[in-house]
Length: 508
Image (cartoon, rainbow, N blue to C red):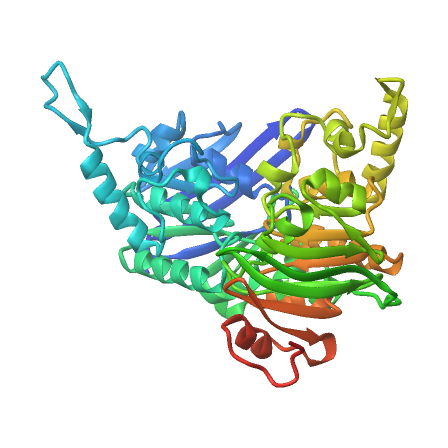
């Protein structure tokens, strides 16, 4: 590793109205090094990186890049100096093609500088986009519209966009949150290649097992201050969690025993051509049924069919022993089924609306009197769920876009819990949130199960699936490959089923 850092941030401070986001933070990264920047949501990680990327201006402190003190005036300036950032919340234009997104603002042009007419060289742009997509292992075409891509494919497009800039410092904010095991390993191979080229990588994640695999050094922030740093050789998951939140690993998964009752949801032969085929299962009151599988296995698609977001070709659904005719999400809600979607920003929330309005959206009919909304009831019930779920917000009027990822997820949970569902489907419920918020979500899931709710939890995190599920349904390429009871489930058995291999003792 080089003896001099490519980047030094010294004494960085930043204050927002009423909040000191950063307090004299020092941070550095060397060429060919992966530094994991860790901390709970609100610790200051994103603020520090947005200052580095030119999105925020620091109040005080110094930034030294390649030995030269600099001040980034805006994101374009930072990018031109070799700083590239991949944000957790995708910065993509859904109506544009993949190629257009990768090269937005930097499109290759035809025609010389002195010519009156210049135009985008689409052939060159698409060829270079195809090369970058191949590097990141994406199957998308440069001509695909981004809105037609899965969350995982959009993440790969973001990574390709970052690589399209000849950056010396690359910031990756939760880059694996939407990726499966194969895609994550491919990303790690890309990171290793970038290290060999002398690029510096700043890696922000809540998946601590990934930190142990890919990072050279960890830096931990808490409440806007630098807590400490460790070489990876001296780090452990337990020690990292202790630095971040002061809790140990065995306190995170709060799975309490619940009485498993009668069948609340029965699904038979649910299919949609080319996506899901012949899925059948039962869910009981008080049960957490985990859905496991690799990206593209059909787990989210199955949830969307149950919730009425997509129409099945075949299949029958019963709720509490009564056949439910679900053609739309409204039908599902009336039947007692709620879905917390994988992509909370685009599908779970209206980010420009307040916490209050987001929370009551599915419940407006119940809160209206003679065609008029009961504002007092709306505020009363919303505040009740803000308190029950410990949603950290200055007020009910705060826009959802200004909340942390964990608090946004709690708002999505609040709006569906307010409708008092019998069946709650959670699609990647802890994606992109910190270990403290995860622990709170796990505790809430246990409380809901103990109260008799049936819960389906779709998760790509193996420790989460193993710790929180009473039974685990595994899918591969749109089909069920088996169901494992909690006491017989192991990571190896789940992965065998997820890759289409038979496992002895797994229910068909």
